[in-house]
Image (tube, rainbow over all chains, first blue to last red):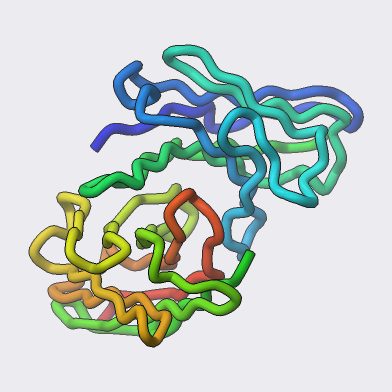
Length: 111
Length: 114
């Protein structure tokens, strides 16, 4: 099964901007948009970014997504202590015989 | 947006079987494909299975093919995952997810241990 590659951890101070990368092969990324999720311990993943840098209602615009042919990134600006969590990227193939592909997750530490 | 609630998790012995359910509220699952995803303790997410909106097409991760079976009852707005020949390394929280990657349920923990 194809996988997406993320850095295991990133850290930054409150108020700063951090980016989390998600890389994969071009054929996987060509399947569609990269989704970004936030997961705090004991909870299920929360959708942050989907589609063409779209955010569900309630997600602040401090969170933004971008992508190229072989990678995607999540940027978080104006870091807050409550942003400390695990972040996952995902590709969903909802076609018949589709599947999901996930990154290994990145632990964000707010210093 | 709606909500998904998984149930049926618990402790099962190695080689045993378990049936998980995922009940939807606030929306009808009938137009949507539905996924199962699992997460071992302290680990990342792993896709498990997808079932088409009408239940005709099913796709499984290679690691569970032949042992897991996904099904649905649209009249009950519920998704199921039948698991057999479970192994200790399959201890995980199991989530159901609607196609399009949202919403997720809160998850149900399956512990495979003697």
